[in-house]
Image (cartoon, helix red, strand yellow):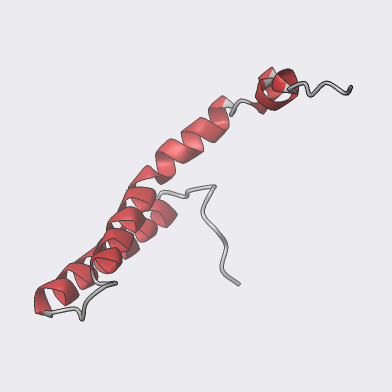
Length: 87
């Protein structure tokens, strides 16, 4: 009879090198305004998935899109190293 055993150590074991470095955490913190603005934009779009957007929904989407764009511009103007380069 074969016994079924778990591989708990292999699944949940994390080595120290798998943790984010301080530089990576700093980059995430620097990009946080962009991330939050993108979440707001997604929320505005999600609200309109099951219905036709009305004027208030359209305003919310436009406002969220402008905030997301402004956050990206601010990050690029700060010289964000984690910002994607557009060719």
